[in-house]
Amino acid sequence: MAKKFNITILSLLCLSLYGCNSENNSAFPEKDASKLKLKATQVLMESLNSDEIMVKINAIEAAASSKQQSFLPKIESLLGNDYVPVRFAATVAIGDTEYKPATPKLNFLLEKGDENSKIAAAYALYRFGEKDKISIVKNSLSSKDMTVRANAVMLLGKTGNKEFLEILHKTMIASDSDDKVSQQAVQALAKLGDEKIINKIWTLVLSIYADDRIIGLEALGSLKTSTAKEIIMTKLEDELPEVRLMAAGQLGKFGDTSGEAVVIEILQKNDAGKLENRQLDQIQTLAAMAIGEIGTKNLQEHLGKLLESQYKTVKIAAARSVFLTSGKY
Image (tube, rainbow, N blue to C red; front, side, top):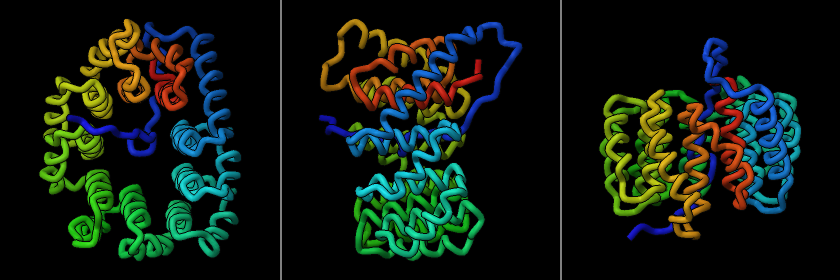
């Protein structure tokens, strides 16, 4: 029986944007695209101001991936938030977007912040060109706090620097690394293109647990090898809609739109009331994110309705996909 899992936007994001194709005659009417962007901006701004921690974190990650400069001053203001997870997410987002006006606040966090904020600030400054700061992140791989260790692993994976492959392997198999650290190391190694990790990923993809399969599929999407793609294809027929949606979205990272039919079928079941209520937020979230990765016109047409979902996480995921697919058609 599949265990319940929680989806956050960070572990599933694709940070690429698509350019316009003015020769494609299947384009959205310009005014409709503008309305979607306006609504998506509103959703993200409202979510960044939410009192709910996870809503705020998901909004930070989605706003950063949108590449819209208008969100960055608000994200910068969250570097001083009272909650560590919010500060961490905001600091990582500042690094990912290379928003250098936040440098003084990053230096403050590096000196006075909690351990998670310090390593996030070090990562951000590394992205700004201060390459020596990454040693702070590397040193945290030996932290006794497993959340700090897992976050350090994740940050090293985000650097794209293959010189960290060896130390990440050691951290993954260390006897004192818990499952959270080991799974994050699999993700980080996949992001760095380490094909040796494929057997570890296979173990996740074959798990009886839905969340393990989803983690494995995300890692395969990051690995982006022909073998990874072949494995993802097999999960388009998984018994659970959540896993099928994740597979469809990850194929989109390869430029493969064969998951389009899966997304449409599941959304149609959703519309017909054939899915259990307890599943709807997870399924709609994954569907919204898959649309962003696949990006076909047929799927884009569902974003307007998803932006009006009763679930905040779904609205945020749909807003992220509006910007991700903007200009593709």
